[in-house]
Image (cartoon, rainbow, N blue to C red; front, side):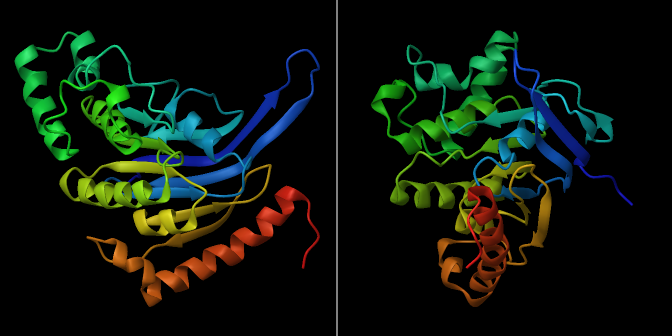
Length: 265
């Protein structure tokens, strides 16, 4: 059997509160896989540990137990083989869009001719041609997020880690970004872990969806999204989409109530 691009096996994460010695178990026995060129979405109630899983895969946090592997090798810290996109774009406001996009290869000393050609390609792919000399404050939220994604892609990561990247956008812009990301994946597919609390977003974008329980976060459901690619927004009203959505919502409803400590209806 071929190994997965990313394999998370029996991941446990415990946080210790400074000064008190109290410990909080954030994750318990979490196991997920991400194959090459596959988008995997993590869904679950607020505080269930979705972002913690991503941060461990990124190498920003160390596992308390279990193992996290990239191409069969343990992840022990951040690396250029993984690119991270957060909800907040964290662009350099004093740099132009072009300068933001080429920042990574430039500081690593890559030849200018090499990264200029690559930047031109990604500026076109993310639909920002003509905005190269603009500054972040001159762009919309969706455009700034496309800059952030282009900047990550410039580093040629093997795995893209996205932590609610469209969460701060209004509904119309978010829908536009969904269409854009679906198109991008046809042009430049790679392994991706996408964190979201939006069921429609997860099913629209993902090849597989994992639903997490309330804290401590565990995997309650793994769901294959068998809607053919390429996809467009019209799948949101298809019978198959609605059937998958009902299955996820039924699973997540119980966990949301548990997270809020509400009685069952």
